[in-house]
Length: 416
Image (tube, rainbow, N blue to C red):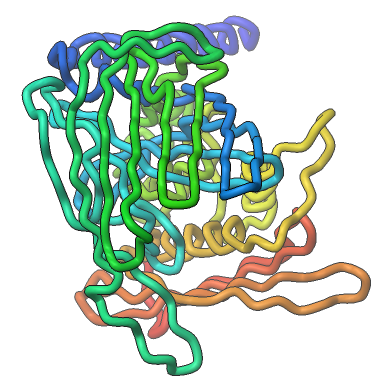
């Protein structure tokens, strides 16, 4: 009897997962294909897509060479309300992030911005290739660069930081041969001028259909740099479709079948942890769940073990180690700060708070031979009654382990 009951539950659960995956596949299959000359065809941004380039740079009488690799890490929201792809680029031990979009109106690169003290995709962007590709032969835009001043220093004249870009579509099928192969590429030339540029800077970019940028050449007064594609892999990973996975998981948890599901709004932090967070709200309690490639995990917001798991995965992504060794911490506090604000957002969501905006800082303190890091943050919003509330979070990290998570709301908020 017990064996039959167990087998029945397993069969039902597998059937629910199969139905959910089939529904997700049908949903993806029904998405309309982009028009023939959409920017999406000239810069593939499926998760996992990878480009490797060889870069040669001449600065006067000094010549340097390097290899760099970019991989599409996932999708994140930009400040203009759109969703963009986040690219991780490695140059030796150096790691940087950039934000790109390839849509029906063209290929765009977004400027970095700081969102609640975490960098992300801003509102400003450059359209490197208009679409429908071929319909526009010339376009231009202005860029307002920024600088940081310290110690009460006087900021420079904004006009001295303004750069004007003039772009021209020179060819639709320019022959280009690079180590990765031979292509017929769209050739775009961008000429940039401004007070901060010595003379003018010319940038030639070659976009190959189905591949993206295969060659890029920068020419300035005293610099000449060429970047050529040496390898390309089209990503096959599908974006995480969290909702059907959560529905399938709930079929095995009858007590949660009637729970109200509240998804946290998509944010860059969720791209870093490769998952989506939701609140399952019942009349007498609320539970947090994380949905990722490994399945569904139910957890308490102050569960240090859950945050340790996410921190270690985050560090492995940021600093890949060889031979499976644990990645060493760098001086970058982004992982723990990201997770600390995630914990604050989740705590506020569990309490029914809305409109949360973050602000905070990361401090360091030594503890014996090891360095212990403490991240403290505050998120302001309103409670379920509409009154102002301050959600405070404190996360302590030693090495690659979260040792303590402390959360509070001021004034105290009753769970709804």
